[in-house]
Amino acid sequence: MTREETAANVTANGHSHGNGSVDGSRLSVEELAVRPNLPAQIPALLEEVASSGKEYLDEDSPTRLKLLETARSLVYALETPREAIIRHCWSETTTYAAIETAVRLNLFAALDIDGQPKLVAELATATGSDPALLGRLMKHLAAMGVITETGPDEYQSTGFSKVLTVEKYSDAFPLMTSRFTMGILALPAFLEKTKYRNPTSATNTAFQLGYNTDMGFFGHVQREPVTAKRFNNHMGVYAQGRERWMDPGFYPVHEQLIDGTSIGDQDVLLVDVGGSFGHDLSDFRRKWPDVPGRLVLQDLPEVVKSVKDLHPSIDVTSHDFFTEQPIKGARAYYMHSVLHDWPDDLCAKILANLVAAMKPGYSKLLVNENVIPDTGAYWEATSLDLIMMQLGSGERTELCWRALLEAAGLNITNIWTAQRGVESLIECELAEA
Image 1 (cartoon, rainbow, N blue to C red):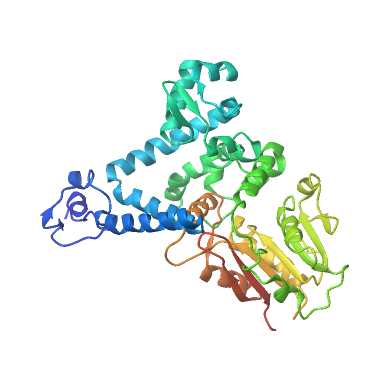
Image 2 (cartoon, one colour):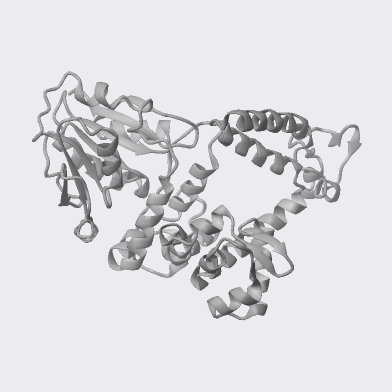
C-alpha cells in the first residue's frame, strides 16, 4: 500500500479501518484535509463546554481550567487538517514576530495609556513607526486575539496586551528569540544528524547548533546580564497563578518538616539549591511565617549579588551545586526546576553532593519538578520537554525520576501533586545502607 493509500485509510476520528470508511464512505486524503479532524468527539465536547461553562459562570470556580482545556480540545476537533497546517506554519510564528515587534516599539503601553481605543495613525506617532507598517502588524495582532479591533484602523487593549506593558512579562519574547528559538528550530536537523538518539549530552546540543556556539545556555546566562535578567523574569512569571508546593493542601509542611523534630531558630530548615533570586523561599516564609529554622538561598555568585529585599530569616550564600554542599545536616534541601536543566550524568553529580550532606534519618530532599504522566500529559509540560531537549536535558516521567534518584542513593517517600499540569513535589530520604 502506498503512503497516500495508507493516509486515505485513516478516518476522520483518528482511527484506521481496513476499508478506510467513515459512515460507509471512502475518504481520500484530499477529502480528509478539509473535514473536521475529530468529528466523532465534537458532540460530547460541545456538551462538556456547555456544562463547564455554566459551572464557571455560576461559581467562578476552578472549572475555568477544565473549560479552557475542553474548549481547546473542541477547537482541535473542529479544525480541519488543512486549517491545522496553516495555523502551525503561518499564525504561530508570525504572531510571535508581531508581538515581539510591538514590545520593542512599546506599542502596548501607547495603546493602553488611557484605556480608550486608539487609531493606528496616533499610535504610529507615539511609537515613531511607519503607519503602514504598524497597521499591518496590528491587524494581525487583532486577528490573533492579542488586541481588540474597534473600528477601521482602530484598536483597544486586552488583558494580555496590558500585561505585556510590564517588562517582567514582556521579557519572555526577546528571551525566547535570543536564547531558545533557534535551538528549538535546529532540533530536526540535530536529531537527524544524531540518527534520532535521545539527547543526553550538555556539550553536543541543538542549542549549540542553532546559535552556532560552543557554550551551553547557562554559560550564556552567566556571561550575559540581559539574558540573565530576562530568564529570571520569565521564570518568575511562569510560577504565577499556579499552585505551589507550600500552599495549604498541597504538601503538609508542618507534618512533614516540623513535627517530631526539635528545630531551633538557628538550625537550617530549608536550603534552596540553585534558588535564583529567592522567589520560592520568600513565598515559603510568607505562607509559613511561624515555622522555626533558617532558610538558606544558594546560587552562583553572579546571581546572588543581585538578590535584595528578602526576609531577614533568609540567608543568601554563593554556591555552585556541582561542588561540595557546604551546609551539612539541614532538615531539607530543595531544588525547583534544577534537575530538568541537566542530563542524567550531570544530575548524578548534583545529587551526589546533596546526598553527602544529608543526615541519615533526618534530612530530606524536595524536588519540585514536572512528573510527566503515562497518559494525558499537559501541553505546558510537553512543550517544556522539547525546549529542554534542545539543551540536552528534559522533563521526566515517574519511572525516570525513580531511576535517577534511586541510583543516587535516595528513596522516594512520596510524590505530592495538586493538579494536572502543575509541578509535583518529589519527597526523598536517604536509602538505608
